[in-house]
Image (cartoon, rainbow, N blue to C red; front, side, top):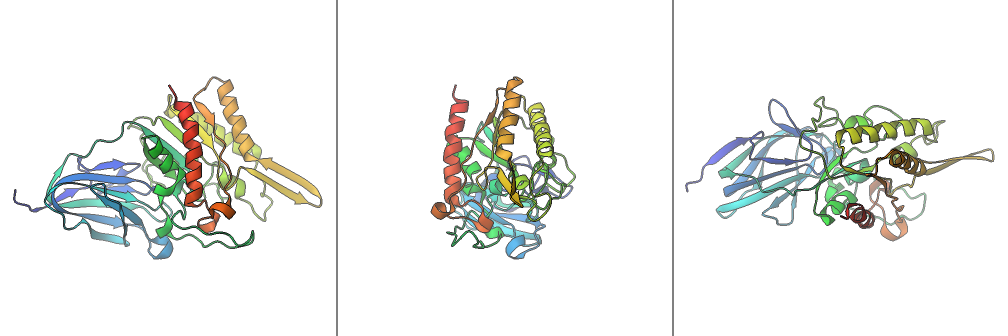
Length: 364
C-alpha cells in the first residue's frame, strides 16, 4: 500500500486511553501519572501533537515513556505549549503498537493530546486486561523521586528536592502490585494532599474531592461510566499525619480525620458496590505522631484510626473492606528518594507485601 500522512484527532475511538481523561473542544486532557495512550497502526512512522501546560525547568517539565512494539521505553520530555513530537520516526513498514505513558503527576501540569499523525493507517487498539486496580494516594503513589536513591548521612541530612524527571509511576508499589496480579493499574493521586487536611494545612483539593474529578484543578467531573475496578487501594493519611510542623495543629484532629475518611469509604462503596477496598498507610509513616511540651507528652496514631474505621465497616456488614499494614521504610538499608520519599527498593518491598495480602483477599 502507498503510505501517506494522516491526521487522527485525539478523540478517535481507535486511540485507547487508560486512566482518567476528559474531552475538551480541542483534544483529550489528562494529568495523573500512569495515564496511558495506546495505538496500533500499519505504516512506518507516528507523530503526536501535544499541548502541554507544564511551565518547564527542573520541576515543571512533563515527561513521558514511549514504548514501541513492547520494547523498553524511552523517555520524552515535552515543552510548554503546542508542539509536534516524533513517537516512532523510522520503522519498517508493518503493524506496530505504540504506547505513551505519562510519568509526571498533576502538580507538574496537565497535558492535552490534540492529534496523532500516522504515516500509514490507524488500526483498532490492542485488547486491554480484563481486571483493573485503582490506587488512591498522594506523592508515594505518584512515584515521587523513584528514579533516584540516596543513603541518608544522618537524621538531619537534607535530601535532594523534587525534580519531575525522576518521577516514575512504573517504579511504585501500586504499579508493581498490579503487574504482579495481572491487572491494569489506574492511579488517582496528588502530592501533598490528604483526606481532611493537606501537608500545608490547607483544606482545598482534598483527595476525596479530587477523586470526583477527571483531572485535578479542572471542572470536568469523572463520570464513573467505565465500570468499577476489582480492587481499590487507598494509601492516604501521610500528609494528614505529617502536616502542622511548628504550629498548634501539629497533631492531627481525630474527629476531623475520622469523619472525612469514614465519608470517603462510604462514597467509594456507593460508587463501587462489589469492589474490594484495601486501606493502607505508608511507608513514610505508620501514622504515629507525638508532641512533648513541658514534660507532657501527647500522641496520636492515624494508622490505628484507619484500623478502627475498617473494623467499624466490617462490623456493619461490609466484608469487602480490608486493612493492610504497610511497614515503614528503612532508609539506612534501602535509601530514600527525593524529599525522603520511598526509594524504588522500598516500593518493591511494599509491592511484595501488598501482593501477598491481596492474593489472600482475592483467593477463590
